[in-house]
Amino acid sequence: MNRILLLLILCLCCGQARAQYVTNLTLLKNQFLTGEPVVAVVSITNRSGDNVIVGGHGSKDWLQFEITQSTGQRLTPVSIGSEEPITLPAGGTTKHTVEISGGYSTANLGTFTMIANVLHPLSGQYFMSNKVRVTITDSKPNMFDQPFGVPQGFDGAGRQRRYQVILFRELNDLQLYCRITDDRSNAYIATFLLGPAMMAVQPQISIDVHNKLHVLFLAMPHVFCHVIVNPDGKIHQRTYYRDPEGNRPSLIMTQGGAQVVGGESFDPSAPPPKRKKLRKASDRPEDMESVPKSKN
Image (cartoon, rainbow, N blue to C red; front, side):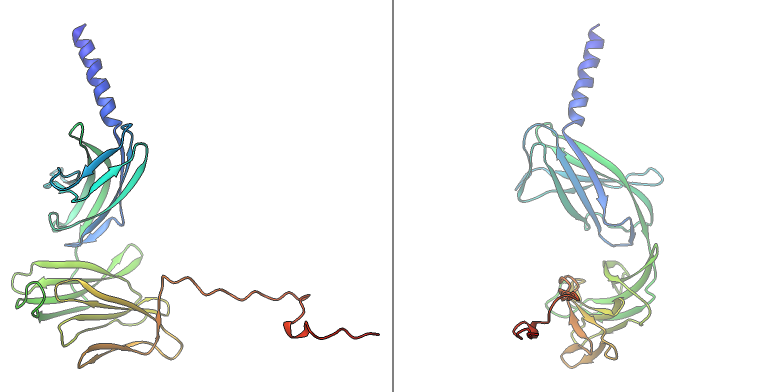
């Protein structure tokens, strides 16, 4: 009888533990190139009945990603904390976008499953999300592969590295990636997406006098994207240009760096211009409003 009572108590405790959070994990995409950061979105609904505070200076890491290979082998978990406290309101849902890099690198090829575990500080337990699938693949630098030296003022100054540009097909789309590698060890310094590309126009790719990489490519019909990449693997600038008829933008190298000539500046995030209202056939033209009607 005592054993049955103990079992019931344990079941009730487990039920309460599972009810602390409802957690959902999604990824911005499911296929990644080797070395590319994984961007995850974790949604947490707090069902504990009280506000929960996680993170804060010196606190325990509140978010953990568990990654398992298709063979069943688990990789070292990735733990993430926060210097600032985060409040999970009772009954509310919060979303957290996390870039998984550094501690975890997509260095291993293959298919993996990923789970997000969220800490409940009062109980000291982590509660897990759904599983998502991640595929890590690789591609050779099929568009550009040139060495450069890292100038003073950037991390790794004096080291020899390589800029590589990769055209990669993701499902039905073509994506343009940049990768920076160490020229001696071939280790990946950074791998990141430049954007979707259309190959109706061949991309222009060059290194300027400051050893910055410039890539000008067709991102969508009649819209070009110009990306400047610093030698430390960070995007310095991204600008867009329209392609008016007969005035296609082009990339030229200059003594000061590089310049895009032709085309016209374009902001893809700006709202479209308002269209003029169509005049009804029954409307009188504005310049006729003041004309007196003739008397018969």
